[in-house]
Length: 381
Image (cartoon, rainbow, N blue to C red; front, side, top):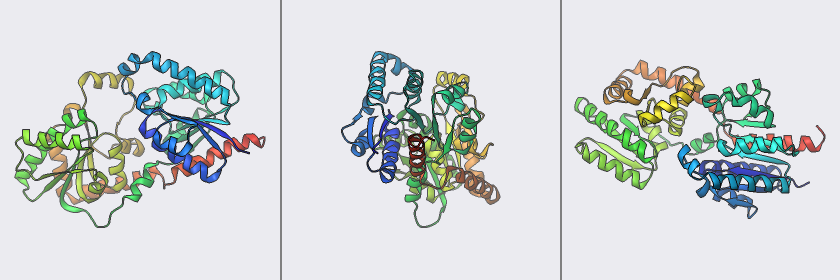
């Protein structure tokens, strides 16, 4: 029997994950229909029953959301009515917690007999633990990335499957031959303008200082896009560091992570990638002070780096705000580049932590769990 599933993704990252999940579901149940909201990749997989809305829906920051409150309220009501009219076997919420958790609650309270599934759990364990018991009452299944998340949600009574991280398949596909280069330091200043503007000048300063003491060391910096590459080149020029051997490479960050002897990485997904590849690194994070202070009142976790959260302790140095200075970063890099014992210990910790990202095939695991839930209902389980 053909089943209908309704998906809701509101960002490009969710669109990628949603398309992977649809591919895996289609392999298991080719006659199932996919409806909902997503992006171009999901629409290509699902066809005209899915609306591409991510360019409009993917806004960042509370102020941007408030400015478009009426637009989001209209989309919310439209989506809820569309789901109730379609009456799918299940709704799959893909990340995008601000919209999706409210929608899950609304559908649960309407008592419509539709299974509600969250694919890629929101990090409520970091910013709103009180929400977890409420989510457990709204949702029928949680599909999460990390083992510790499974424990948290199951303690609240929410059936949870840990599928591993979808990144694993992508990173494994980008493995390169050859070993690390003992004289190479990788610099990863992030993928957003503001991040690069705040962090890359410090990295250039670090490179200049280390180059004076260790003229044989080389530096490669990863640029996420052509505009950021231009920005980074202008920062090097402005710092008067044209004589420092910093090569700026674009779109090859995973390759650089596998060649560099050590590195400095901006907080974010890149730290997970560096952990997976076992590159010894430190994490840097620097935002506007008001943003940082507000964040500290909301976020209730000891570490911000996912490697440290997964390990349950600090294995990766975190240099945050004023600590992300040239002196601290230089001292870290110098010790890891010259102290083999310290470097080996860090590499070992990273390898152990990387195992917690899973063994690949996350979308396939998730698809299997969704089929079990939907067909378990149909078979009266």
